[in-house]
Structures are given as C-alpha cells and as structure tokens.
Length: 122
Image (tube, rainbow, N blue to C red):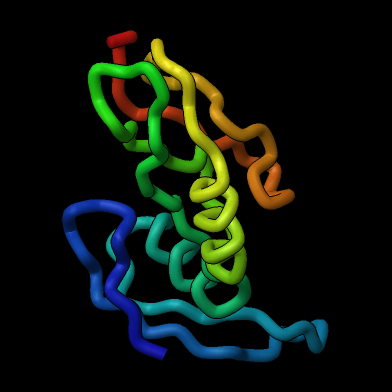
C-alpha cells in the first residue's frame, strides 16, 4: 500500500506491505519514511487507522452559536461516525473554555470531546 505520512509537514511517501518475520508473525514493513513516525503511521494505517475528529457543537447562552471541538486523542477511524453522532446530540452551555470536556469517553473510545475555543456567556 502507498501512503503519504501526515504526522509532520515533510509528507513522506511511504510504501507498506505485510511480511512474515522469522517467528512466523505477520508484521508491516515500511519504506520511504524519514523518521520513526512514518513507520508508526503506515503500520497504524495497515492495522487500525486512527484519526482526530474535529467538528462543532451548538452552544446555549453564548456569544457564539457554535463552538469548535475535537477528540482529546486519536480514535479508530471506524468510530468517526459514532463520535459525530454523539456530538450532534448535545448542546454545550456557555461559558466554555479551551479544553473543557463536553463528552467524556465519547462513543466508548476512551477519548473525550473537548472545546477548542472560548465562548463567553451572552
């Protein structure tokens, strides 16, 4: 598989393939990476792709109608729709500050959904 690493601005062009090591275990062999992060990225993409989810949530009593939010860490790519569905079901209450947790353990991912900007009370 071919990937472009997104973990830094360098954007290494990676090539990854399944191999079998001397113990008979399946592993991922990665080439084209400039740093170890490329190996981690390509291996994750082959085994369990992870993403940081960003979206917006409606705000009650705020000077803004919506607040930008993100997951506190990466979540499995397969859980993105579930995370977004959870975000659509809530309304945050102003005031909000950067880092405020709006949903703990969103969609059972072990990550929180947190505010990424300040919203003052209207």
